[in-house]
Image (cartoon, rainbow, N blue to C red; front, side, top):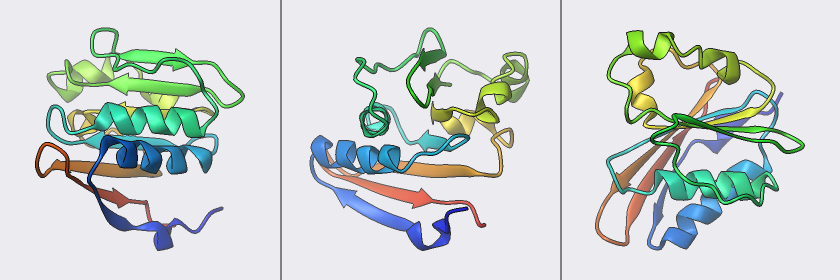
Length: 147
């Protein structure tokens, strides 16, 4: 098991390329069962980080935010389950979708608008909060679960 406690960090990015590179770094280290929970206001760059995670995993498909489908699956050596919970109104609605089957599975889950999942995310979730500073600057806080 990886010691993630040393990976807690706050990063300030000044270009979307830097946020993408951060995601790519996370994706290149991704392992089966990893869950990345992305939160932050509309337009802060959650999908940019998700695209980076996918590329870091070796996925070359065009990654878009699955706002209207809620889930996009990208088959690869290690599958990517890309969720967008923006349209979820409450935890009861989320419970009816059985997304935990994916979150607790053997692929990698990236969840945009993860704060809408409430307490339903697994204990091993890496929480990534993106704060909009200005049109080019973001503060990204990454919290890895305790081992």
